[in-house]
Length: 371
Image 1 (cartoon, helix red, strand yellow):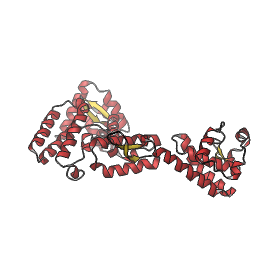
Image 2: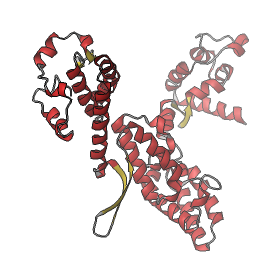
Image 3: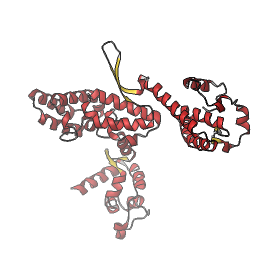
């Protein structure tokens, strides 16, 4: 929203009221002609010329554009980005009009008002403590802008080991939600935060091995026995059913770690629950699915297969025709096999077209290579 689009002056009235109607004299005396500004001003007279927003053709319009931009930048999406891009040009124009101190003051004031309003909203906090009557006694992890997302994530990862696991999951989920709201990439925040929020794929072998280690650390026999029993149940659990029982397993592991005072060893002697209960990140899982092919009912990564298996082995398993189909050149020369590379994309296509018998033959050959 800017001066041109605020035709009813609704936004201006709100902001002016928040400022206590303390406007510079050149603004108070100014009567904006919005239609004229919109139609007659050249694009270079706007701080956002592409959208023809935030006019800077006079002292008054420059100050008003600073007012609107400082408010809009607190929002999200394209409007906030346009305002953020416009602010440097608004300040540059203010230098020309000799009103930089006024412009910087209104920007700072509006920004401060926005943060104060946000700080009064429970939805901007990831952790709220209440007393028995339901009154708020403390609010933590307040996030009001993009910078606040990365700061909160860093602080959380440094201090998470002292939190109850349910609190860890709640706060991590809140930070991820705010990251989405303010356009912060998950890649910037890292996989650890996503796993604390419950994102990730459980791998049974990893969980079973880690629980064995924990059972050995148990000081109380009954706790070790309980964990061992759970491990036995997981050992026979169908991998497809594993995600359905993860909440129960997570509860048990975290309560076990607390009872056995193992939380102080996180990241040192033992792995944090979030890291081994969901050891496969969603991003990695997606990449694995994208490169997965079936050979005789077994899953292989065709990219790794192309890099690891010489073309001559495909020739020995399925003949010169298949070897030629998967080679980069499209030709197979037995005398020059060492210099022939396998093309991953061609291999993927060729593997999907194999008959059941050919898949079995190739699988047996690959197994024999490893013996």
